[in-house]
Length: 535
Image (cartoon, rainbow, N blue to C red; front, side, top):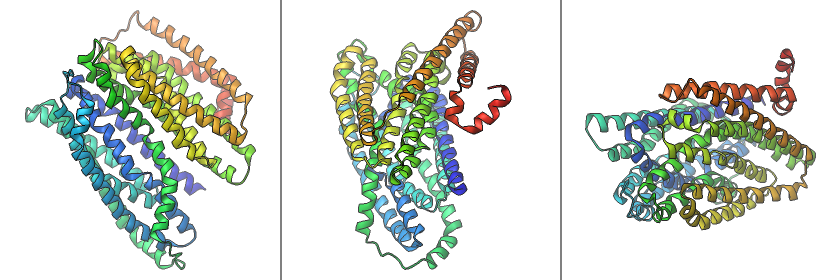
């Protein structure tokens, strides 16, 4: 058990550091290329993320499960056989995905950009999509290699390669953009092209790390292979069938958010062409899908990791018919999700002006879109958790159906709502699509498990009340700060965030401990420390 916990902790820490770096680098990059060109960056990454998900199709996670399954039976030969075949398959699917995205970049750009757009041209969008497509050649291969190590419960290669991949990518991105703009006197559009190529360069860095660990561990794995029991001689066709059954729901989880963004990418500029802000539609889309979205995902990172750690327990209890334990775990999951996400969303929404200034610049539309978009973070956290619960209780088929209905609603409502409310319309369509998908997920969970909990409803009400009190403290703090500390510089805005965030956090923390909800949700270890302070 300690090995499992250690491995999970290493993987989580590596992923968390990688995600943090993925938020921070946008600050200097935004300063280099400006708000007019930052949107060009997201035109490349959204279709890239979709093609990457399709190329991988959840295979690394399924692959690690498959390898672990046969390793536990003492059959190390089958896992090695699948490694050789799987890496070849990923190279082929990655190259096919690269060719598809590269050659369809033009038609995709024409669908995306409206003639009235004065910020980006069809050629600009086509070229950045083509530059980012090269990463598809390497990333699927790298991802499956990570899955092989995870099958041996060796998480260090995945964590380190993720971190090195991100560091190499960011260094190349920022360094390349700086050289293009300040040494070679290139255009911001060229700087963005070099920036999106960083996905390919970063992936090469990640692959080198994996090869280092492979050389280091290969003698040990060969020894295990030599001592392997007689191989089960599973046919490759049967292996891939088993992997596909497990991977399909996983890929739907992975592409849910990019698909919602992709709908915005395809429809936003066209819908905005009839509004008075048609000339700025690319700038607004860049805020929605990149700059604001990066900040919206911060509360999701905070909560989902804690909640998702509970999901394997659900699978275990459900398999053993321990339905009371399943219901207790569901209680804890929903409460922790809201307990961690809601205060972050409330605080960030009230500090949206300061946050947008620190990360980017003072921008009225930027901070307004951020403030309106931040509440959606609760839905972004809720959907993967409810979908993972469906997997745990063997109802994964509903993930595909429920998400598909949510996406259809988003697609149907996006254009009319954008024409009426501009960027707020796109946010509203996302909310409607996610709410319907989540409610349907919950309906299946409630029916399958006969799940009801008045205690959770009472706790949720308590969490809402605590957040309302915290919001009052934050509002009062901001009003007091306005008298002597403005937003004249990024340093001043950062100071406001730290002061007000500290006050809000202290109020929420004190109330959570005083009411006992923090101790009940976060466990006995917290209680051991809080008793020393009288809680």
